[in-house]
Length: 262
Image 1 (cartoon, rainbow, N blue to C red):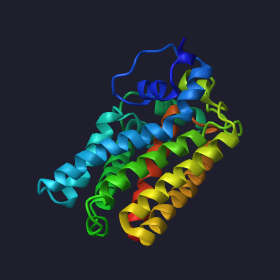
Image 2 (image 1 turned 60 degrees about the vertical axis):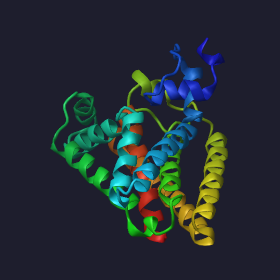
Image 3 (image 1 turned 90 degrees about the vertical axis):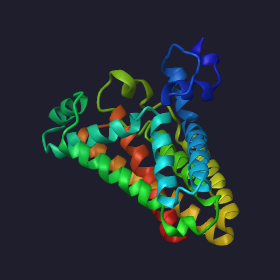
Image 4 (image 1 turned 30 degrees about the vertical axis):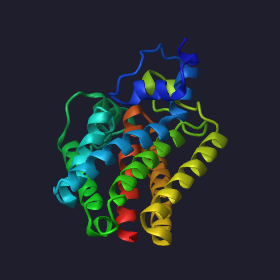
């Protein structure tokens, strides 16, 4: 049964393109997969960080290294969170009532605002990760930032599945995971994510890195809470696309703060 599978395997099968055993997904399995989502982010972020570090070691320069890390992260996730960001941008930019905006988000095509959102976020990702402040902190800084940002963005998605956050509709993935995560689980996961981030920051740049990475997680959480609140007010709840936008905006906020704080 899918509920007997390790939560990390369930999450890898749902949220990445990595090979993982297929599983029937029910509400209990979805809840377990969501709880593993931050650690999936840590894993794919670490893989992307290793590729970025290799690109830098081969003389590619900080910007190319950062861009390669962002590209690998997108490939490992099948671009699903980027797709969610684009669809959410199209729906919100329509300025239509919630029902119409949600219908726009369901379309398979990407509108001009979706394209603009993708370009702005990806360029900002590469600029933050390729900044001189990170490059000047040694070979560990970029991989650590990639891993911590990817982990933090997915923590924000997990926080969007607490009972106080309604789904925009009852069908599909949104209806399956809405309300499945108790607030205490999000709190425990948040503390664990903060601990990993602080450790990575300390290893990267001592006390300065500890502060920078800690601030990155804290600011990303504030951005995620603010964005989630806006989405619920505007759309009446969250959809799968909304969770994708939470991931992308959360990790970008984390990377920007780390780069600026260092």
